[in-house]
Amino acid sequence: MAITKVRVKINGVWSNLALNSSTGKWEGSITAPSVTSYNQTGGYWPVTVEATNSAGTVTTVDATDSTIGSALRLIVKETVKPVIKLVQPSTGAYISNNMLPIIFDVTDEACGSGVKLSTVALKLSGATYKDGSVGMGKTAITNGYRFTYTPQSALEDGAKTIEITATDNDGNAATTAKATFTVDTIPPTLTISEPASGLITKQSNLIVKGVTNDTTSSPVTVTVVHGSKTYSPTVGDTGAFAQAVVLTEGTNTIKVTAMDAAGKTTGITLTVSLDTTVPTVKSVVMSPNPANVSGSVVITLEVE
Image (cartoon, rainbow, N blue to C red; front, side):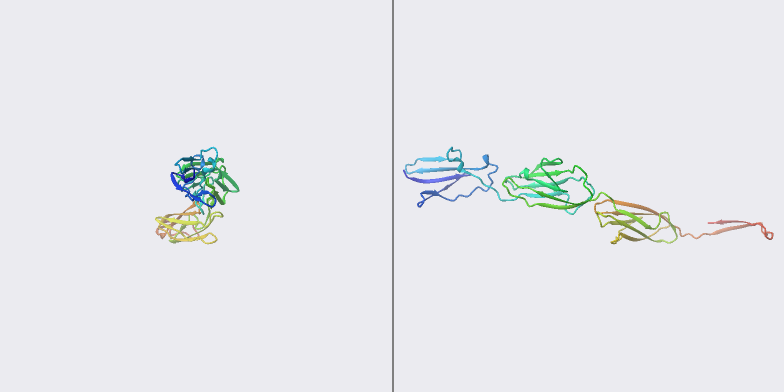
């Protein structure tokens, strides 16, 4: 009996094939499912073939057939790369915590093959950390995982580079995530050259001068607080700064604070007194008066 009809089914959709008179074979193009087969049972999309002869007899063969079943298993792979997102620290950040956890997300597309955990790798300070490494943990999030790596020993001060790589289960490699950050656990230096704390002056105009520096997290910002006023003097390339303040009569408290890019601070508090009062001689007593030639005279003054 002649074969009159051949069709195939994949993912619930039937497609008719056409007889190629040159080869005697039935051929046709079908559209692969839009979703990867990775998560399907067996990791493939099963294909069913149905052949009908002129007598109306139908033969059906599918992926479970012991002879040709393996040829009816269509493997479909997605082409979308997974995405790596660095959560902490941000690139260019200055941090004062030398054991700050590094947090990043790796996600695949919805209905994708999923993140291949064995390929997720974090490179830091010449070492590579993977899923299962000491200090590396993960939690499931939508379409992927959030990874947290906590350094097992304190990172040295200075610039650091991290590099994160990953692929999905269909072999698509994510764009490598790279970032640099700086560890700074040492506060900036701060020296006040003028005025000396405890100064008593009759001049109300005062210049606060000093020098600050931080070898790891320059530039350093300086604030000068006097009473209700806060000043932000310019810090030069050498770290020198100067700020004019106007003293009030009596004791003045001036607080100078230097802060580096990592948020570490050093502060110095000065006390300066302004005294503009003029001394007044209220009374004078000399005894004896009159006095003998070359004699001793006691002078008693009352001065305010």
